[in-house]
Length: 141
Image (cartoon, rainbow, N blue to C red; front, side):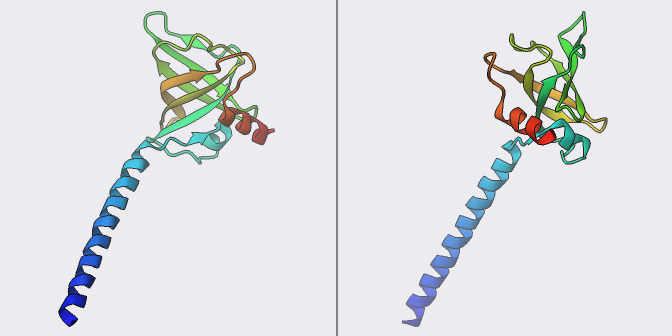
């Protein structure tokens, strides 16, 4: 009887070890793909991690869009009406991107406090604003 109990216990421990390994592998993979949203105020306060993929957004500041005439590089500022965040992007901006409208940019925050965006998302009609931007604007007021 002792041999059978010992064998069952070892089997159970082995299964728990394999399960723990699988769970840790899944959590590690998910950690690499999580993109948390930060408002310009949160970034200004140092809450956003550097050199990690994040999402940030707000209203595009009027007169802040600067385009490089020789490339697809563009830089602009977004605000939550308390603080501003500089964003640099290389690529074609969405057709609905314009000053005074809400956007969300996904990219990496540099030491200088500039978001190097890989993707810029704009609203899809005149009444829509991304939920994260709406929440951040309401929290900032």
